Length: 100
Image 1: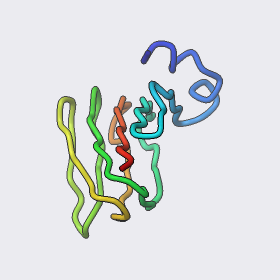
Image 2: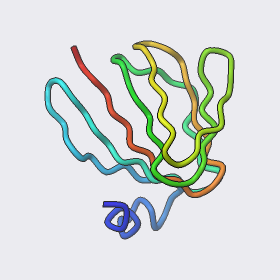
Image 3: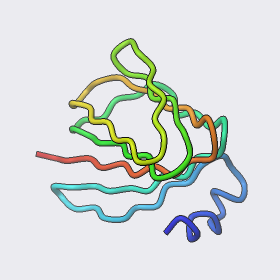
Image 4: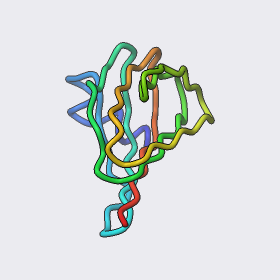
């Protein structure tokens, strides 16, 4: 999946790409590839989420604190919690959103 994302037009011309792995009424799983320095501005999710870093390092800001997350690390957020992400290095992230 990561290599497929690296061949995508979005990755070739930008600083990120998103590859949906599964989408159904209860669960969304998306692979995000971020180039070093890519930022996801503060936003919130309507549902609980987990963010697992597969490779690289990100700064994950939520709840007034910023945490450095590296490969193998996982964090979870409740719905509606504002958060932002910055890739410190080229990174692959697995984002899971649970509805319900």
